[in-house]
Image 1 (cartoon, rainbow over the protein chains, first blue to last red):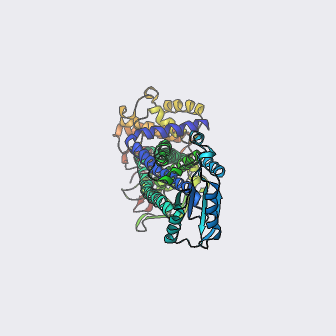
Image 2: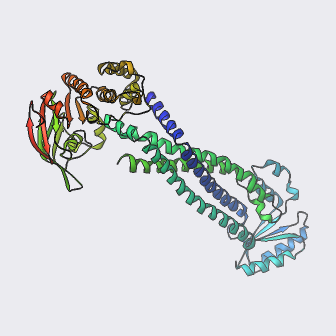
Length: 298
Length: 225
């Protein structure tokens, strides 16, 4: 059995080496397509994280100054409690805000250390009776004129920005990725097919002396799987670069404050990496299985 | 050892390769298949090792019906059948030893057995001194000997040969026939398709003649025509 194992490994790598240019093309295509799949997933996750505050019907958030006076807060609360335009609201004090911040940036302790509960702005997360965009904009304008209010972030505006951005980018990436995944499967199919054609006599002899079908197939299936895995192996570091450079760029962006929440937990990047490896292996296996069933078993 | 019971084989439902052919070949026999090109000789051979499946009739090899054999069992059938080609089909990048060892490697024989059997078979076919040569460094006759060594190294019950002397000059062919005769005398059943009148007439073994798919003659100690 050990001997067979080495036989398969040897045959597979001899074949990979023999078709080096095709092999490299297949690996790079897999790498690029999977890097795009991964980036698309990261951006989606980032958008989910960034818009986390706006869940369960919250349409706008009134951020108070960190040093807002108690009577300023009371004035706001009075309006919220009495106005028929407000369905419900949640008050997030500076400690709760700090907790949330810590959770959001659990991977970036230096960022968490740079703030204290004292400087966090307390906020009101508000669910209006009428979630219509114009109505929300008008309410937001009214609140922003109140004393002690730092800024008002409306979901309609903020979420639209982020979701528009992330949907467009991640859909474009995903579309490109799907095309490239198909291309890479076909490339792998072709590479394996080339490997099969290059060894026609060998395969014929193997079959006639009584090698089992699996014995003939395995080196070719392995070859395709290795293409997929190696491509995925290159895509994984690319994901970490996207996480640490591209997403970090948004987090530091001053132009769009809400993008600062555009963070992806490290665990998510690792999980995505595992998926990328699984998808890579699957592409390779599917591509080579097609080649094997079409050209080998026939 | 091999029994054809009214076997019919057509290609694409039109070209008749074999029509209701029946024959029985005993263990240890040496049989020539003769007939013009396209008469069905190759089909006859390819049916024995299940490269082809008959449209009708039954083919028994070593007591098993190979026409209804499930495909995963086919490799195990073929381990009992050696196969010699007209064009040798040696692997150009492997040495003589490696070419022969290959047949044992791919059916999972342990290395010590391979190390023992390969030199023994090369001795038998008279190529011990050329064990490390590549096929391109050998003459046609020598290449065919390697091919026979590869077919016989696993000591099959049956040896099938499709025009094994087709590419060789008469003198070299005689050497190949001596070798096949020796293998036959060790108890292996040999079925050989050939066009070579001289060989058939000299050997005087059983002759089965095919003509357009029909089995037209079956003589023990026959001649070409």
